[in-house]
Each structure stands twice: as structure tokens, then as C-alpha cells.
Amino acid sequence: MTIPTKTDSQKSDPEDVAAAQRTSAITAQLLGFSGLLPIAAIFIGAIIWPQYLIKLSLLANLYAGTIFSFLGGIQWGLSISPQAQMRISKRLLVSITPSLWTVLALQLPAAQGSWFIVAGLNALLLFELTDADKNQRPGWYIPLRINLTICLSVGLLAISALHFSHLI
Image 1 (cartoon, rainbow, N blue to C red):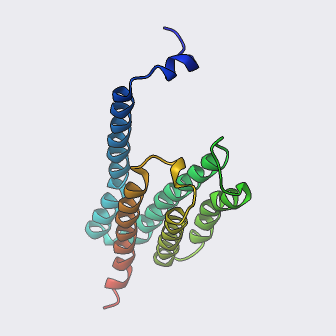
Image 2 (cartoon, one colour):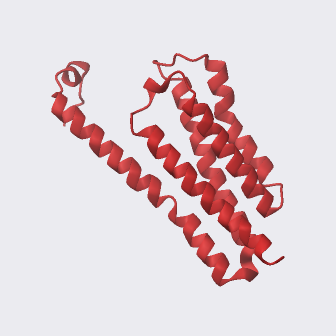
């Protein structure tokens, strides 16, 4: 097996490149949407075993916070790419915010922590939607990010709502 050289990649057939991009988009969608399964399982578990609601809510917040931190990592990666156009300091600041935001969210009661993470996820999405350097990401990224953010937000808010269903 040989290591591809720059000249090998320049000889790539446009059809091969397009096929590779489609495969990448499909893989990202499959992985992204399968990443919602733990939130769905936690929600179902909280309905079946309401006595574990607080622990399951914390688990949901930890999981969503991990995803949120991963999204911050994407921003870090974009800021150090050779194609980076935006002021690096701005994107680097945005990149570390999700981790710190998650730590703060985990200090709150579980239901309120979920709201805090949802607010952060949506604020980062807003940043990405208004980002002048959209060309740094593949075309499938933003539509997938919107769909996953909506689903994750709804899942967290649904789990959070279970805390208040006992008060009614």
C-alpha cells in the first residue's frame, strides 16, 4: 500500500470526489441521528422508572454536554485550519465556551441544567448560522446540525418536563 501524494489527489476524478462526499454526508447523518438514541432511551427510562428521574436527567445532561463540547471542538478545529478566514481569537473563544457552559449547567438542578444546555446548543447554532466562513464546512453540515439541535433540544426539554409533571 502506498501513501497518496499531492499529485495523486490532484488526479482525482470529480465523480469519485462527489461519491466520497455523498458517503461522508450519509455516514455523518447515520452517526448523528444514532447519537440521539441515548436521549430517547433516557426519556423512556424516566417514564418507566420515575424514581430515577433525577439520576437519568443528570445522565441526559452529561450526554448532551458531551455533544455540546464536541461541537466546541469542531469550532477549535475550524479555527486552526489553513482556510480559516475569521479572526482566530473569536472562534477560539467560541470553541471553549461549550465545555465551560456544560460545567456550569451541571451545577444547576437537573431540569434547569437541561434548559441551560439547550440555550447553549442553540446559541452555538446561531453563531454557526451567522458565520461568515460557511465555506469551511461541507454543505451537509448546517442542515444536519439544525436537525440534530432541534431533536436534542426537544429530548432534553421533554426529560426536563417530567420533573414538573409531578407537581400538577
